[in-house]
Length: 249
Image 1 (cartoon, rainbow, N blue to C red):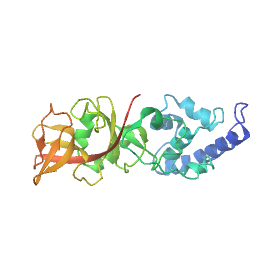
Image 2: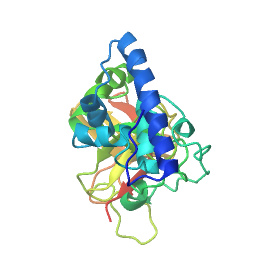
Image 3: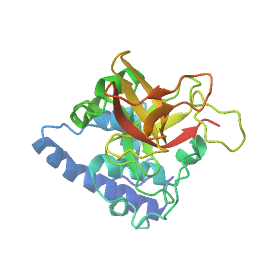
Image 4: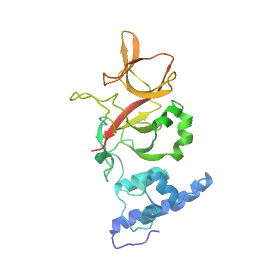
């Protein structure tokens, strides 16, 4: 049972008590799975800098905002409404493929559909995984997790763009500039006009490109014309489809 703290309203104390009760029950479930549910473990998985933040929430010293509720619900495998009953459902929101970091990190996530946490990884790790979902599963526990704001499935990861191959200076044209973040779904079926992650066997590289059909041939096309197009042959492994991005603003 969470302690009553002067900073919390009666309603917020109820939320803290709900979380505390669920935490106690889940510690037993996690233990049966061979996982020790500690505050340090939770802080690392939820992206907090210290276990003290977890303690503050569980013991009712810090009010639970919607962001924290969703993080705890993802970690503990419960519906957010079990912690905060007012969060009975998510409001549908169309993912445009270009949301801002500010929106992605806002306190209230009630407008986000298909809410879940996904790993943010390096390009080297993406190259190692290619399209191997088993590698995704086995490496997930060692990855930093952030929010997936939309269409990505359960095998989605995030990369930070580092080159200008998919950048455009043309107003209104789709663009993936340096330092933006892209969401890649390893399990989504690829179709022409998709932006995809592709592994090139001969050069041992992985790239983001547009998957284009032209005159019966398939190509990996850059948005930036200063980069070369690549024909899709047996030398290419499609590793996933880009389902969205956000940029720091």
